[in-house]
Structure formats: structure tokens, C-alpha cells
Length: 224
Image (cartoon, rainbow, N blue to C red; front, side):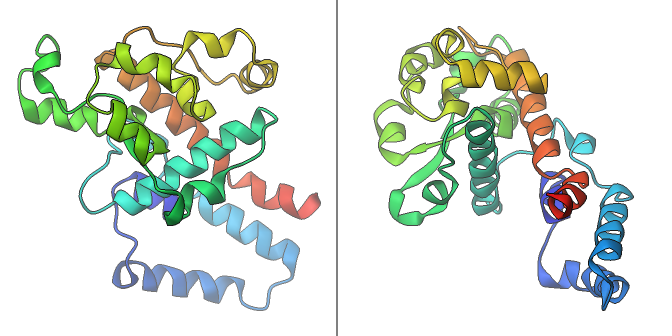
């Protein structure tokens, strides 16, 4: 519920959420585990706020940096786990490890004048979650201002979500390739990264989020 609201750019503060949570608590209080599972699953499936409703609008802004970072950590860890690698989720969210949000596009609107007529329009697209990665702070300091084509070789040495931009990742990575085949997710490499590629990547992230926060996983967890 919370991640869906965040994806739809809705508040999750106490004043906003308290009534809805209170009503949900009344529904599930003292219920046996099987009925509890059914109630929670039904509640989520009937929710009007979905990841798909806000496919092309979820973006980074000044008030949601912490939440975007946590969501990027979940997306990245999911891709790793499903590809047969160890999850680094706790490492990504640990402040001591100094991971931070990396923009695929540097803050250089003049490089994109062929696609955007204003700096504001460029900025809106630049901050879409599909144009973001979670990388060590040292990476951003070293390469953050470079053009995408110059950053691309360096993405190959980072986490799998970043690597997925690079063609090399699709040559010698059987676990990742198997994950793509089994999931049907539209991963693809990009030699350049333009507006249409940004929107493709945004849709990919949304589909990954739908899998991570799939209501049916509540019942699957119970039956595991």
C-alpha cells in the first residue's frame, strides 16, 4: 500500500494514512492467518492506486529522496536475486556505505535540446525513476557529469541494474539471461539514451515494482 502511494506521488505521513490504517486494523483484528491473508490480498487488489496508473510520472523530487533511494534498492536487489546473485539490499540502504542516487543523464539540458524545448521539461524527464540508478557516491563524483556514452562502460562494473544498460551484460551472464527469458521483462542495452529510451526504462521499472509488491505474494509466502 505504501509503495503504491509513493509511486503515485501521494503522501504517506501519519495524518494522511492514520484513518485508512485504522480501518484496515479493524478488519484484520483477531482473524486467523488464512483469513488475514485473504483480507490483505483483497484490499490491495481493490486499491485504486496502482503502479501502472502512474507509469510515466513517478520521479525524484526534493521531498521523496529517501523513499526513491529505498525503492531503487529494492528494484536492484530483486534483479540480483532473480538472476541467482546475492542480494545487497542491506548494503544499499546502509548510510555508512554511501550509496546514492545516480542520474543517467547529467544535469546538462543543453545536451538534449533536440528533444526538449525547455530546461524544465528536461528536468522532469531526467528525474523519472527510469533514469535513476543506485551507485556508490564515488561513482557519481567521478563520472556523474559525463555524457551517457562515456558513462556506459563504467556501468558495467556496477550492480546488475546498472549493468543492464551495457551490451556486454547480455553476452556472458546466464543467470541474468535466464531471468529475462523466464520473466519476460523488457531489459535491453542502450548504446545511447534518449527520451524514448528513458520512457522504456520507466516502464521496465514499473513492471519490476509490480512483481515485487504483487498482492498474490502474501498467499504464496503463507504456502511456502
